[in-house]
Image (cartoon, rainbow, N blue to C red; front, side, top):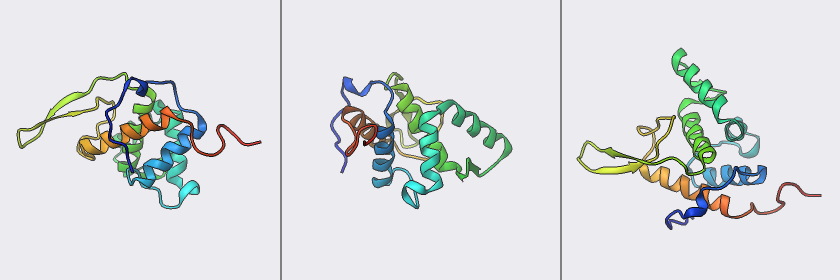
Length: 151
C-alpha cells in the first residue's frame, strides 16, 4: 500500500544508496508502476538500475531510439524505458523542479511534474503522484535487511 500524505521538505534529499535503489525498484514493481517479468534477474531490472545510476546516458539512448524509430531501448519496451527514465530524472532532481499546470480536453487543469522525458500521454497524474510518494518514502528510511551490504 502507498502512503498518500503530501510530500514534505524531506523529499528533496541526496541521491539514493544502492540498497535504496533496489528497494525503490522493488516497490515500484510491487505496486505495478513499472513492469518487471522475472524479478532481480530480468532485463528490465538491470535497465532500471542502470537508469538510476546514469540518467543522462538513458536520455541520450531514448533520443537516439526515437530518431531511429525503434520500439525498444536497451532491450526493453520503449514505453517502460520512458517511465523508468522519468523516475530516474525525479530521483536525480531531488524534488527541485517546479510542476506545470496542464489543461485537459475536458477543461480541467491538473498539475504534472516538469521533465525532459515527456510521458504525459503514457501515464496519469495519479501514476506520477504514486511514484513520487514512493521515492519520498524510500528516501526517508533505509531499505529493509542489510543496508549497503551484509558482512
